[in-house]
Image 1 (cartoon, one colour):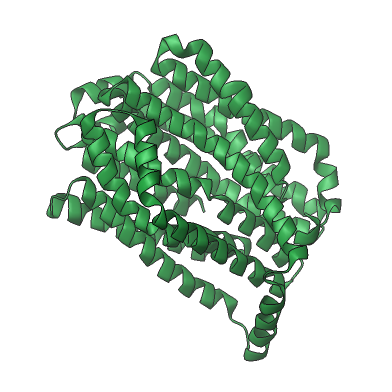
Image 2: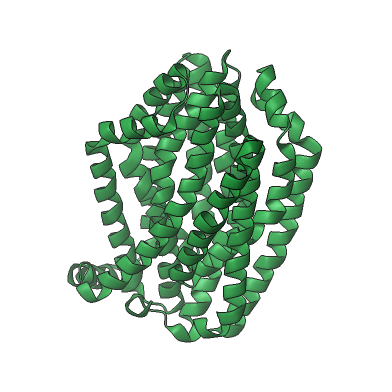
Length: 435
C-alpha cells in the first residue's frame, strides 16, 4: 500500500512539473484551484472508501460473505447517485467554487476549463473509492496496489501525450485524468470479479441476500450514521485544505503557485504514511471482526513503529533534497524562490502529522467514526482557524503554522482517546447493526 499510494502524489508532482514549466505562474495556480474544486468532492466522499474498508474488513474477519457484498453494493449505489447529481448541477457548483476561490482573471479562466472537463469523471472516481476500499477490506492489497499503479501510469502517459505532444496545456491534464478514472473503474470491476471467485450456488445465495437486505432499514441506519460521522470529519479536513489554496490565490499568483507545489509535497507525505494506515485499517478491522485482542494490539503497535520510521525518512528527504524537488517542478524563478522559503514547514510536517494519519487508519478499522469526527471538529475550529486568525499578519507563514497546529491536535486527541478506550473496542461489536 505504501508503494501504490506513493504513485498518487507522484502523479500530482508530474502534473505540477509539466504545468510548472509553462511560461506563466497563473497556469500552475489555475491547475491548483481547478484541481481543488474537483478533489474537494472526491476527498469529501472519502467516506465511501473508509467505511467500506472498515466494515468489509470486519465482515472478512467474521467470514460473513453476504455482508461483504452488501457493503460493496450499497457503496456503489451511493457513489453513482452522488456522481450523477454532481454532473447535473455542475455549472452552479463550479461557478460558486470559483467565486469563493478568487484569484486573477487568468487563474479563474483556466481553472474553469480544467474543472469543466474533470467533473464528468465523478461517477467513475467515486465508484473507484468503493472498489479500493473493498479490495483493502478483503485483504487484496496487491490488487489494490496494481489498480492504483496502472491507473496512474495511464494518467502519466496521457499527461505527457496531451500536454507536451498535443500542447493542450491545462486541458491536457484534465482529459488525461478523466480517461484514467474510467480506465480505473473498468479495471477495478475486473479485479472485484476475480476476488469473488465463488461457485454458482454461492453466487445465487449471495444474490438472494443482496435482494433481501440491500435496502433493509435495520442495516441502512447504522450504515448511514457511520458515513455521516466520516462525512463531517472529512468536510472539516477539506475546509482547511481549500482555505489554504483559496487564501493563497488571494495573496497573489506567485503565492498560490508556490502553495500548489508545497501541497503536492504534503500529499507525497500523507499518501505515503497513509499506506501504513491503510494496512492498519484492514488488519485492525479483521482483528475486531475475529474478536482477537492480541492481534489488535500487535497491529497497532507495529503500525506505530513503522509510522514513526517513515516520518523520519520523509523529514530527511525534504531537508536534503527539498530545493532540488522545487526546481524540478518549475523554472519560474519567483515561484522557486518563494516556495523555498517555506521548505522548513515540509521538514517538520512528517513528524508532526504522522500520528493523525495512523490513528485515522486505526479508527477506520474499528469503525469508530464518532471519535474521528469529534477530533477533527476540535482541530479545525478550535485550533486551525483561531491560530490562523492570530497569525494572519505573518501571511503565508501564518497559514502553514496554523496547519501544523491543526495536524498536531488531530494526532493528540485521537491518540489520547485510543489509549483511554482501546480495551472497549473489541467488545463493542462487529456487525453494521451494532456499530
